[in-house]
Length: 242
Image (cartoon, rainbow, N blue to C red):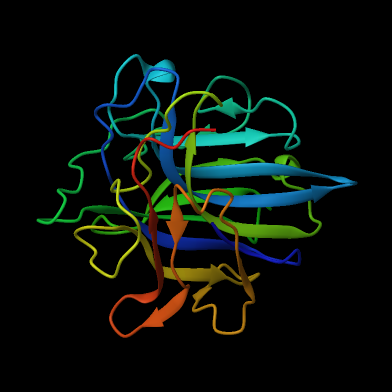
């Protein structure tokens, strides 16, 4: 992931390339998300939205839009509508758990979804929009109490989850990061939001890189590209152990 230091933040937006994981084991998960870590006393709550492949959750290997929150980073979290948390919008173009298609084709075509997660200046809720349709589409919100008005960290994250002694699934395209959008998973056109709900380039935002298994998965630099705005690539192959 690339994340901010703790501070006062109001949300972020990015294009995330969509990749399938057809050979993933039932107990494993892979995906990418926008994350807000919200300080609550001495712990952090987490709200996030993105896409993932999670056979144990859906009984198939489709790529699906998801939402997630947890009251602290040690407690088991809650996906989609499993408990009170994310509130889908009436008539939303995309609802938690809905399949997303088509996936990117390695070396041929990249496909993406552009999502935002930011604090609404009127309600104080954290709202989720999809921005790659004809006009921005409101998908729903996380109630304000899930992410109190304190310090936050923002993160753009590619992730996998698997049992410690198993062989890990691919992350992203299943290849280590490179500059080719058709071969490497990416976050691009990254924007931050201000208190008025306006998106802007994160020129002066200090970003921190976190890679917990660089022998298996990696991420390249968070840079301003001429056509793609602030962007980075990430990923790695299957087979990681431990």
